[in-house]
Each structure stands twice: as C-alpha cells, then as structure tokens.
Image 1 (spheres, rainbow, N blue to C red):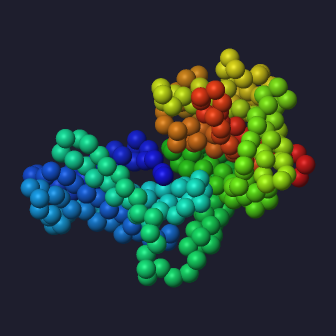
Image 2: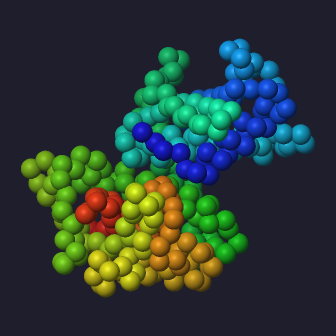
Length: 296
C-alpha cells in the first residue's frame, strides 16, 4: 500500500495542530475521502474516551481556498492516482491519526463508496490522461526556459504525471503491468521482461540505486557499479541540477524516501524522452532505470 512522503506527514501534523488549537487531546484524527473528481475532509479529537467533532479546520486568518486542509485534499487525490499507477488498486480514503506521544497511524480505505456510479477504473485512467496532457501542453516551454522560477516539487509532479501516462501506454502496448520476470544486463545495457510466453527487450540507462536500510539514493554518475555508458541520462539530470541550482540533483549521495527516488527517475525519463522507467532489486538495493524501445 502507499507510503506517505515525509512532506505529506508534516502537512497532516500541521493541520492536526491547527484543528486542536488549545484544547486537550489524546489523539487527533484527520479523514479524507477521495472520489476521483472530488474529496471530503473531516477531523475530530479523541480525549478521555470521548470524540469531539467541533472546531475550526482553518488557522486564524487563513484563506479557505489556499488552506492547508485544501492542500491536503488536493494531495490526497494525487495519492489516489499515484497508488493506482503502481498497484492498479484504488484507495478511496486516508485516515491519519496523530497521538499525543507523537506516534502516527495511517490507514487506507479500499472500499468503493456505495453511491459511486460508473466504472472507477476507467474514470481514474481518463482523469490521469487528461491531467497529464494538460500539464504537457501548459508547461512544455517551462521546462526549457522558466524552470528556475518554478518550485522543483511542481516540476517533479508534472514529470510524475507524464511518467504515469507512459506507464499506462506501456501496459497497453507491451503488457508491462503483468511482467513475470525481468533481467538487467549492465554489460550490454538492456533489460529483458518475461511477459507470459514472450519477451520484450529495451535499451536502458541507469539513474541510480536506493539503499532501504540507510534511506539513501546514489546517482549513477560516478557510481562504482554502473558502466560509464549507462550513466549518460543521470549526467543529463546532474547538468540540469547545476544549471538550475537544484541541490539534490548535484549530490552524489542523497538522503531521501523511495518516493523521492521516483521523482528523480521521472525527471530523468522526461529529460531523456524515455519510453518508461522501472526499478528492481539487485544485490539487496533498488536500481532505478529508464528505458527506450528502439523497435517502435
């Protein structure tokens, strides 16, 4: 199931403390329902075994249209899409509980609302395609000319959306969503996917590797285990980071989450005009790659 980014957790915590204000509490519960095109937000406090649903979800003087609760709802819709792309499963709600001792608990609701009409899979895929095309049309020049004026998180988000569309296309064209086995050959610079009774081969470039134990991402450029000719796209990303002064794209070793490693890979796929991206376990670490199908 989906794992919240550290930035998501901090946003939930901040909203929880806005809601509780100066009241006593044992836990603060934030629930967001995601319905593809819309969302529902609610909060309540638990204290001494009693539930208190009263209170203001906005901070003093906060603009309701640019509030943290509004940002959380928007982010929850994005999480619904991101999770579907990775797992082909739809989550319909997030419950975030902050306990007084600092412990947090995150729960996801997989049950479709009884009132929902239509085919949620088709609806969600259409929404992903529509948003991706919108981002592509409105921001195509921004990547080349105006990136320095944008927040890097906005760039990552747009690249993730673009990668999601490529992933959907890969599922339709090659059956990438039903891969049985895969094999990376760093000598010839390719990956072979076993899909049922056939194989698909793609040329690759390595973006980096992720160590779950230390939560570190090592870029492919100057990576001791990555052949030099497979470092080209990672170097493109590094140059991009130097040009626009983005620190995490220039540091050889980055402390980050797996989701942030996917951000780096999505950006790389965009810059390299790759057909898709993939990750797999090699010697205990995740290896992130982008690939191209030269036969198309």
